Image (cartoon, rainbow, N blue to C red; front, top):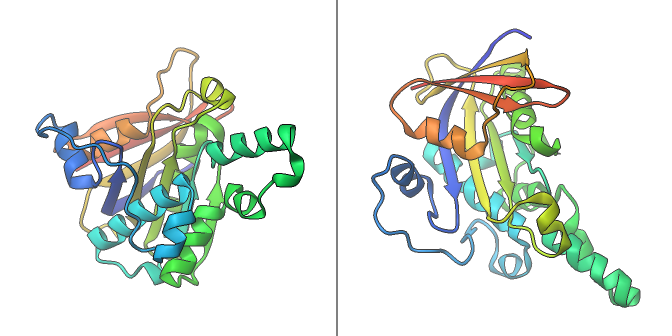
Length: 249
């Protein structure tokens, strides 16, 4: 695969201790002050009634997507988007399995509606009136690499900025031990193909991997974007391969 270069013109992020990218960036630089835990993402882009009933993944995704679009000064309604989550809505899946085992007739159609993998992108596109292309994907531990490749390829193919949203919520129930997702994290990047766009450059290259190669995570990518120096990452891409990512400030 040839190298794909994209510029990051806007970043959004949310964690339970740092509710936006500026605060998370300072913390990743070792400069942050005392963190104030946030109970849940604000997701102000959603109507109030929808915020009340939306699951964690929807709130996470919509919050960071809105942050990234604002940081890039881009109209969310015009941006194609790629939403990527390794596990989807685990809490509701656990709840539905318990309900099916205990009292199947009590299963909520609304809860089922919110459990499907593309629910967050559906909430987002409706909230911001986006009619551009949208996609939701999952590739287990290769999800971040798959999302980056999908968004970068789309940005180059259509010569347009693309919104990439990566998110996973903390798991509970029996799935928590299996997935190892004990904390929520979400971030969003507005990726642009233009060489003269502002922001850090991500240089992507698909490559083979030896068995001993260490792979990096989403927080590693954010840490690299927070620093004023070059960084090189390897993201698991499935089938014994990695996505090489060079971060150029």
